[in-house]
View 1 (spheres, protein in one colour):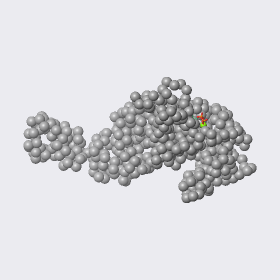
View 2 (cartoon, rainbow, N blue to C red):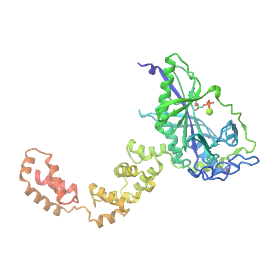
View 3 (tube, helix red, strand yellow):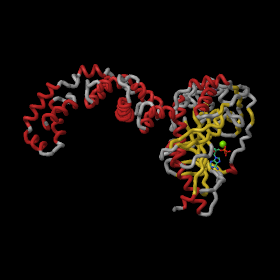
View 4 (cartoon, helix red, strand yellow):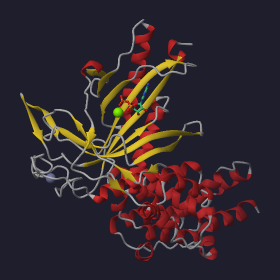
Length: 485
Ligand code: ADP
Ligand code: MG
Ligand code: ZN
């Protein structure tokens, strides 16, 4: 037993999701990413005196969506508050956020652990707020400020301290990422900062009921960084305690290049945000009808989809997991399934195999999104239908698949144009087989004296002369009859 085994980690995540509304939360400015610095601004998001913010209704809609998808209670009345701090990228000197009365509370998400069990992670609250601008420190000796991001709508999703390892934190964050993408409320791009995560980490001896002092780790811009940073921080805290030291409450930054954590500020420097209700904004009122409408417009969520793929389509758990990863992929798969002529688990699995291997291989190699994939779901299904009805073999299907990638043609057109129809005519196949058997008398003797694997050789030779178009089932049957009978 190492000293590390004596401890258990306690982790809570604060996740910020940038909402994909077209305009900002309190003004009409565009939220577009990557435009010229300081171009998407107006007196409101610049914090000029005398202006009044007006709440973007879509932001509330998105917050309700996320709240319902994470099993939260939606407040019929919530309020905006001012969070005061001074920083160059915050022209107003305060951020409009929600504090005492957030829009969503007391939800949860379930994560699937590697051992197959499910763990529930509590969600304390979800609130709406505006983003700050960006300070750019790596432009020579000066710091530049770009306030385009000021007023971009965010949801902050705060978890309970229910997470117990870096892996669980990763899985929870993945579930949030998957959920916001399914809901279409955030693009989930962690490198561009559309989804950001701060991790609160503490450790305690196993069996201890009180929590230890937490430190907050920021600046992790990928899933793997989140996992690595938390692992690093857990080890740092245990080493510190084992060495006779004490964890202090502080904010830390993850340095992804050096793979280390560096201090940013300690509790003494912590801000007193002097929160107070924003007098410029009326309370947000959400009626029962509004919540019902949103509830009815929710898409099927990843957990439900995965479960249905296993229970009603008979897919293996692994397939269901891969196919439900992203909504577009799941919809591609289902689009193909709906176009099958024979609907049974064997055919569903066949489509799943094509999607998981051939489709995803191309998508990953070409770095394209599934919606730009050249073969439409009905065409993929049509190709599988041609295998089912015996028109083409699975091997020829690969050729048809590659051709569809290039030409986007209907599989039937390709099969006809290239003369790929499978030959199932027993007479024609028998003729070729007789010719082959006449050529290889020694192999026949060896086969008959027990070298069973030579069957593969005869099948291969037949396929070769028939250019892969012979129905493999018929070839096998005839060869068997001639060689064994
Ligand atoms: P603060 O007031 O410092 O922001 P909060 O109570 O708002 O702290 O909690 C922020 C996050 O920290 C939440 O996700 C919460 O679950 C988590 N958290 C709270 N206490 C601990 C702890 N002792 N160890 C780890 N995480 C914690
Ligand atoms: Mg907090
Ligand atoms: Zn503006």
